[in-house]
Image 1 (cartoon, rainbow, N blue to C red):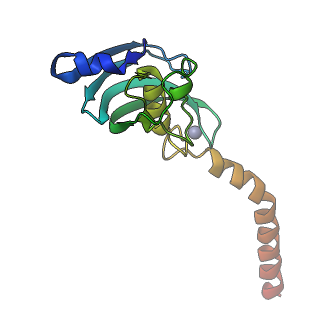
Image 2 (image 1 turned 60 degrees about the vertical axis):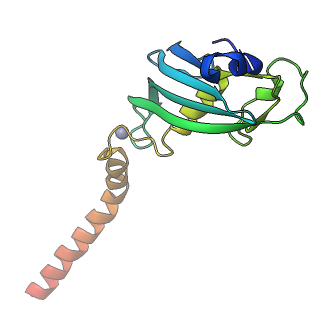
Length: 168
Ligand SMILES: [Zn+2]
């Protein structure tokens, strides 16, 4: 996915550029290509970025540790401020370095916008904190039962002993 030069958005009809997406993102391991659209609207002092996109990723279940497929969908809209305080000439990609700790919020009006990094960030935000193959997955429950079983047997033995003593 090519970067978009911000002045090109300003000069586009209705100051709008629509980026069609139908590809795998290098940083996101997904089962299917990411499909959707990113709309960039130049609003003078800010860039309005919105996107509808979807893909399917393979995750590991926190409970049973099995892999499962999860549908990721993005329906996001964000304002990115355009400020000359951001250095205009930086190394390619530096001004749009995306980490989850420091989301892109300000770009130079003469810089460029990376739809790929932005979309990757949005998709990453949609990843579930708790990854379960099924909300009723009993992977963990079965493990707990295995651990508790010896204890249960001891209690059962104690109960039957009690019954025997009461019987006398
Ligand atoms: Zn599971």
